[in-house]
Amino acid sequence: MKKIIICLIAALAQFGLATGCCQQNYENTDPEGFAKLIAEPDVVVLDVRTAEEFNEGHIEGAVNIDFKQSGFVEKALAALAKDRTIAVYCRSGRRSAGAAELLAGEGYKLVNLYGGILAWKESNRPVTTDTYEVDVFQTKSGKTIKFYTLMHASIRMVYDGKEIEIDPVLKLRERMVDYGKMPKADYIFVTHEHMDHFDKEAIKQLTKDGTQLITNKRCGDMLGYGEIMVNGQCSTFNDIKVEAVPAYNTTEANQKFHPKGRDNGYILTIDGLRIYIAGDTEDIPEMAAIKDIDIAFMPCNQPFTMTPEQLVKAAKMVKPRVLFPYHYGETNVSGIPELLKAEGIDVRIRHYE
Image (tube, rainbow, N blue to C red; front, side, top):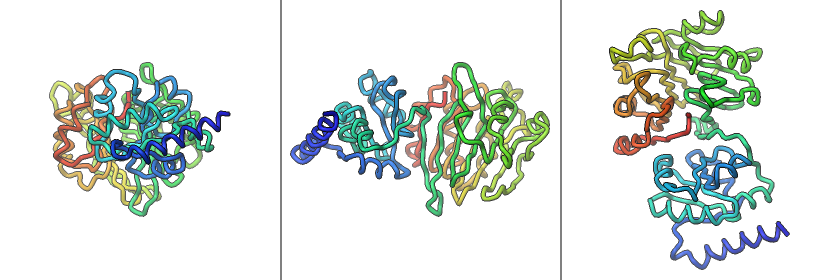
């Protein structure tokens, strides 16, 4: 009976697409087409169900914005870039159709999964209870690299079967990351010794035979091991080129948090894709020398890092193709995409806190 109902939903959706195409300003597709679509690197998956439904199981990498909650459009405008295709779904396809109609009116390109996640599951497609957001990019040779939004300054990257962890931390306030459920790391990068970036237990949980830890001198000294890099140094670890770049405070009252010369930012070049992990820094002049960045993670929370205005200035210096504001705490970063729109920078707001 359940299968019949799902087939009816799909058939009705197709009928609606065929007969109402004059009015409809978004596309419908079936689970097979949806799966092919979301495999593309510049497609955002949007789940418009409630948080409770989302946590029970969702498509990997989906952004969750509840269609029924007030401010849906405003939240979507803050979180979703208009130059990316939005693949939207809900339970059965009704809410997502309504969301698609609204967002298409705001200038987005929408593709709706008819039959919703019910049809997705019925076709034996996978779901996950992992709540981390995922962004997918392609390297120069066409390989896939995934970025998982974990927490605050903690980022997981997966490339060609390799696990890369940036500033892994187990717990911060009420947020926790269960590294025990993740694969062990091939590479761990640590920018500096503050507790929201440096966690010995997290490093221990992620370490296996052959794990390479790359860190600044202070953390290397505290651990008693690791590959120490200093500002200006370049090294290559198998197929990853690493540049350690400066990260520090310039505002006089805040220089005690991150003094010049102590901490690292990192530029990783992976199969031609250049990724800038800024670490805790303000809009320092050395950023003007950082070139050809595809993806940048830049912090935004004074007094420890940058104000939104400083972040905009820093982004204009670095000019990344894609910018992820991170480490932003309670700082309101929702206005940054509009401020950088004229620069052609794709700003993606993810829920790091």
